[in-house]
Length: 524
Ligand code: KIV
Ligand code: ZN
Image (cartoon, rainbow, N blue to C red; front, side, top):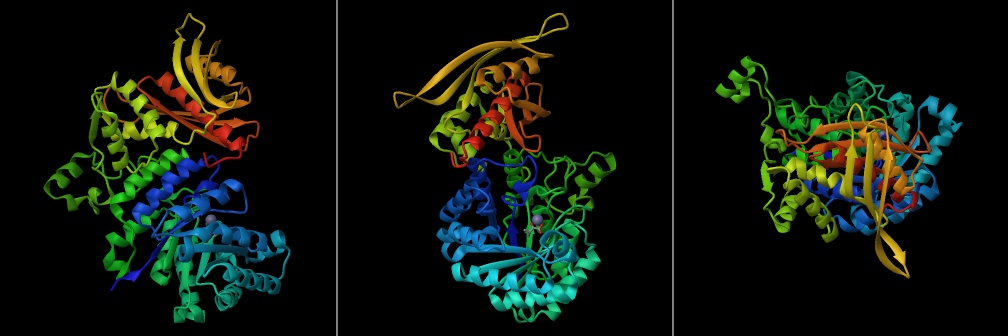
């Protein structure tokens, strides 16, 4: 019998808290479906009290997803706990309220202005209230790794007594060292009665400020933690959270070290999950990232290549196919029909409605005329800019641009606006305009700003990469825009064989997201 390690995925909560990673509801749904397909145990879907969008996201995922626990986060105050309780209700026995309250001296003195006794009392009261709304209660003493261990033991005992079935020990600011963190978990496993008797399990939640989130999480598993909180690609606040794929593959690759411990994750879905999260969040994965980076299994040196050809085990400690590499091969050509494109999108993990399939298919056809083969990577890139556009979204119809060292860069663009109402009937309106800029991309952006009347859009980041191989590869552009508030960035993506067109599509997709955010609707 395996000793079960629960994987608690917080990509949609802590991951989404990463500045600039905010996802539209439609993209969150794709990520959540993929997490469920990968068989994580718990999905933390959001923080229901902070916005209607977060509440709706948790509520809808709790209604739709089966076979996975849906958690909603709450501060240790009644209104948060009540909102989380309502949001997870459709999940029934598979709903969890996750309550947190800071316990370290620095947080008690400077953030909360409360004594140890007050914190203890509030924690118990919060857990008791949560327990009246749901059976599955998790409590997190925030900044636990910097909390006095004796007080932490008291807190753990008290919240378990009040009904918490999981107690999560966060290294909130990524301060702990692996040996030290492992020793803390071992001490809690030994000195907290509820952990000893199995009344509650120990969870950990590590941040990567010193690059130690995964090492600390694994040290905790070795010491007795049986839930790890993590995110796909290590997305998360500041330097991020522990990377799910690294934790799963460490325990799978080293059973000699971790003994009987295993989790339920279907590792074949890891690479797919990484790609979907990268697209949804706008955070590209670095090439040399463990497990999911493009170079993770690439052997460049002659000596390594020779060794791998003779016996893979010489330089490969894992089989790349085991985590889903090599699955995404050449797929389609311009002759492929709508059904084939949709089937491929499904195989890649997307569940699109008819309108969305049509949007992807239309762009697929345009690209198919210019490019011989369309690879899975290209198809995924196409979905990046098209999903998550609201009803009142803008679409590119035509684009022309002029450039050169003796010409004033000029763009002429036609855009259509969906969803405008005329006499109560929805209709599509088309607009045409032209403008100049410092270069062709700038001219395109200025023209789009004029047409959409978004002079407040400011470009803060522009990235371009090719999604597949060959001279006719699809270029994928990612832009980050701000709209007045410099601390809030909106990501847009676009793809095309023409990089200026890809830039236009990325800019339009960011504007569409901003319109959605302003309308307060993440549920479009
Ligand atoms: O980092 C942290 O402490 C958290 C808690 C809410 C668990 O994210
Ligand atoms: Zn966190």
